[in-house]
Image (cartoon, rainbow, N blue to C red; front, top):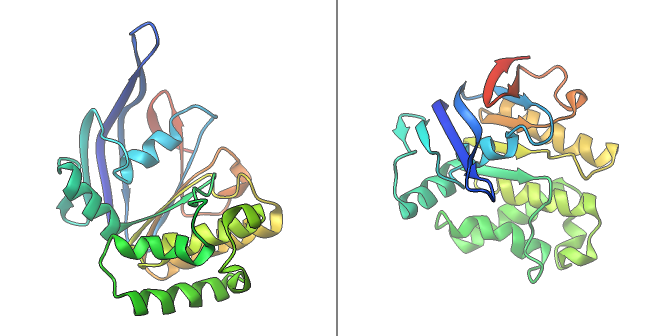
Length: 222
């Protein structure tokens, strides 16, 4: 479902010198599998997920979703591929402040041209499943952190994406809300999605299928 080969990424320091964050990362995740990426804060986990989800361009390497080579696509084609293939769960939630909970979830439907009525039914069902249906008309500032992450989760899975990327998905949550999100990730994998989770908390990924550590810009078995 997901295959990366030799992904590389560097940034420029204020002095102009390059800072190499990723130095040839290889990763393959099949449908129904979970890959957990651990590593110290600043090791490049978020950068890796951004490359895998086509939010940033790699400096080198190749990336495939299924049989489709996506790393070399243009900006518009990448946006379409991202909408069709990828769901994101971010630590910071990234909800749009001016939109209600329901409207935030429905944003995901815009990228795939899903019929409005169908998308609304699916969004309401997800909000109900996650226990936040009664908050659908509230704005993010009116929601607790746990509620915001549940809404963000509903947005991420609205289109049943075959690939789910989660960047520190429980980092801002208490244990109860964190357990809801982790259970959701596992259930998505059981339903056939490929799941990649990045976290610097080893206990978050304990017992998951494949666990990798990102160190020195490369992935190694943990």
